[in-house]
Length: 141
Ligand SMILES: *[C@@H]1O[C@H](CO)[C@@H](O)[C@H](O)[C@H]1NC(C)=O
Image (cartoon, rainbow, N blue to C red; front, side, top):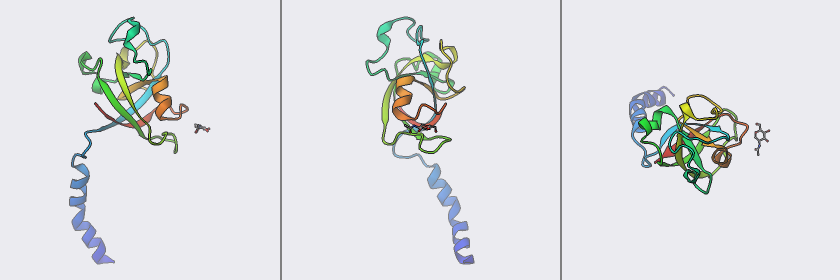
């Protein structure tokens, strides 16, 4: 037994290093809350009605990705990976969202403060149970 523990002890720096190495996908981990109408005017496009994709999968950028407004129009692939309540994430659901707003100035309040992205009702409901106020996500531009 002590030999196994000693072996694990010697291997642990290696295991930690492997964990820290970038994964093959370039995805980042963050959080997502949601917001409800009114969505206009938005921080990116004002009152322009054509800003929303026909899928209604869009989002407001949190401070971490807002990038001084450069985030406007960026598309992200988003997947729910975990939440406080088990079975909140809808399995095998990835969505593509378009950034149309800035979370800090959005007309309607996010369901949870300071998340990486604030998803439209439709976007949030596609990847998670809407009784959650926020979920952990994997996202990739
Ligand atoms: C969503 O979560 C609530 C609260 O945890 C639960 O009562 C409800 O059954 C869930 N809905 C679905 C579709 O899983």
